[in-house]
Structures are given as structure tokens and as C-alpha cells.
Image 1 (cartoon, one colour):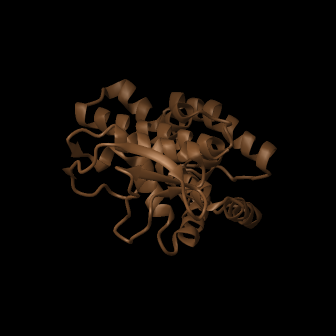
Image 2 (spheres, rainbow, N blue to C red):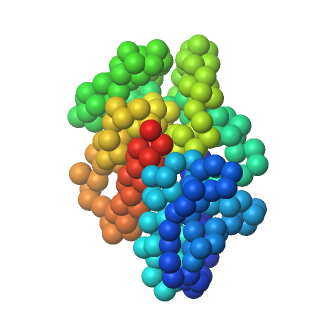
Length: 238
């Protein structure tokens, strides 16, 4: 999933932030001793203490007004708990696998095509070598169907993940537009910055030629922060 859209800003209503073992297992984030709940009444309870502390740090870092846009881990945690979240996440990951960004190489210019071959090609090779995922490449934007066995294996890999890891994988795949890059981040084969840079290789190539405006730069930086948060998310689960 792309991270859920942030809610409206509101005044900070708590002073102290902490984490503590939850009654039914896991670790709860506590605001002035109470566990916050989502709009669907889901308590903010995480499966590991490090993940709870990652989420708690977002609450602790807020000023006088809560800025949900800066609380990606919190939003993702609550999205994980939503009804039907697991099956929807698997379906989205499979869908991106069918149209993976890394399988569509540019017809030109030659410098871009060469860069894609060098950088994307290595990750496609990693997916085959480490995960047994064989992808068909295409030149241009015409749809290229992927082997059924590859799609089946992507689904199997997704279903093998526990809920919070699956949610992180879903968010990463959506952010990058690539199941390959999402899986590489999940398994530590790529850093957050490396995966993000590969996902915007075409855009970066164009910006090198034509420049970048401040709005596009701000959007890129926000997406990079999301990628880094997702890398931390996975680290807190392992």
C-alpha cells in the first residue's frame, strides 16, 4: 500500500510518550499512560519493542500541533490492523509484480538505456539468483506479461510474511512501483536510498538534463524519507 493519507493536523494533547508490554502480547505505545486508538478503535500495539519505539519516536517528536504527514510509521501500523488489510496487500504486491517498473527499459536515449541495463539489470539478476523470480524484459511501454510461475512465487513470498512485514513490503512496492525493489529492500539486498534511486532512475536522468524545480525536489525528498522509514520498519521486525 502507499502509506494512508495523513489526517488533518490537530493540537498535541499529551506530554509523555513511552512504550510498555501490552496485556495480550506485543508492545503498546502510551501517551500519558494511555494507548491511542485509530478511527477504527484499533489500539496502537506493535509486535516488537523496537517497532513500538520507532512509532513512539514519531509521537515524541511532534511539536504543539500533530503533523500526521511526519508520522508514516504510525499510519502504516494502523493500516496494518484494518479489516481486510492482509489480502489487499498481497493483491497489490502481485499486481506490481505483473507490471514491474524494472522490466520496462527505455528505447532511448542510449545513455539512459545503458544506465538502466547496468543498474536495473543487476537487481533483476539478484531476483533470479536469490528468489528464483524470472522476469521478462521489455523495451518501450507496451505491456509484457510475466511468467505465471513468477507471479505465483511473488504471491507465495508475500503470503509467507507476517502482517507487519507484509504491510511494510506492500508500502515499499507501491512507493517504488516495483515488487523487485520492494523485496530487495525487505531482504536487505538494497539500502533505502539505493532502492529509491533505482525507482526514479528515469526521472533523475531527465533532471540531470533539464533541472529540477523546488516542488519536485520537495516531493522527492518526502518519498526518500518514506523509503528510509520503511527500511527502519523492516529492521525493527527482524
